[in-house]
Length: 205
Image 1 (cartoon, rainbow, N blue to C red):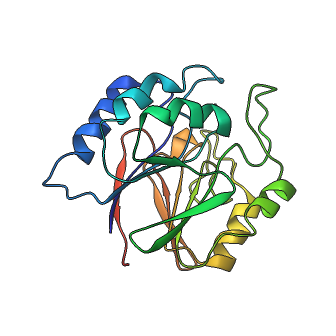
Image 2: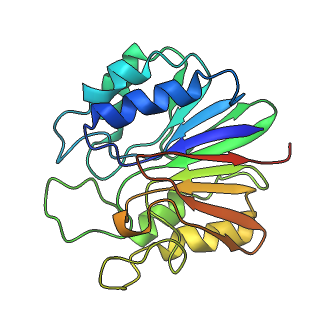
């Protein structure tokens, strides 16, 4: 399965248009699109890129970032017929189980506008994640692709624990801008901090 992964568009319509071009390019032979959150800026403008992304007819999985809530993303993504928003729940595409959890984890220092969850809540919301599938989260597992511009790790322990326990084939995340485009392996899982430029990843199904 060939997947176009992205995150953190933050209302960037030029980046969204480029993603549409890649997704719809027959030479790329993309099977699915995954968007790992932060379509908006501070809860404003979640729909600004989704009206462009709606031109992608491939199956698409989205999770909210800390810049928009799950309900705000569902409302904004209503125009994208092939897209499904996950947040504490799962889906199945091309016989691969997919589980999603959005938001900033752990709670960010950004204040009341940020859509955040503590580690205990995240652990509960991840409990039903199936094994050996795809995990889509906004926040990275701690000590993977989560190093901020000062080198401090900013990821989630609950997500890391879930990855080690459930062994997803692929984890798609974003959130930490300074690690956009980076990939690491954690146990048996490939972790991708996708970023707005997008990353194409292939997994065995």
